[in-house]
Image (cartoon, rainbow, N blue to C red; front, side, top):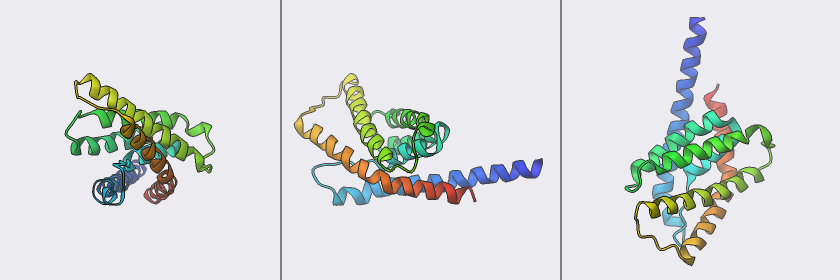
Length: 174
């Protein structure tokens, strides 16, 4: 009874610590290293990829949890529209989690395609929110091309991030 409950809480805390540290690590890479290597203003979103992969692999509860913490980390770094990343990442984790039982998890094209779609949808929602908040956005051809390139690059990164999160969840449960 009590020993089993204590072990369960210990395991849950271990998983939170491992996944949380991984999200922080991805944020550091996303904020520091990736901008140096990218061109044309492409903004990769490793935390969005992690949210998509978690939802697809482990369901809506874990997808929403990773989405919340990913969004919180991103919102703390951004100075505009606080809560946007939390909301969109949680919704993304939930929507991807709904697909968990319907997909073949070994098909690596699924996280690639879903990540590409999530990249486009979250950016379109951002543009809409920014517009409603009165931000003067000039969404021209360059912004759309940048978004499409980011969607492709995020999609290509979904495969290794998916493998990483499979391994992290497996390690955190042992």
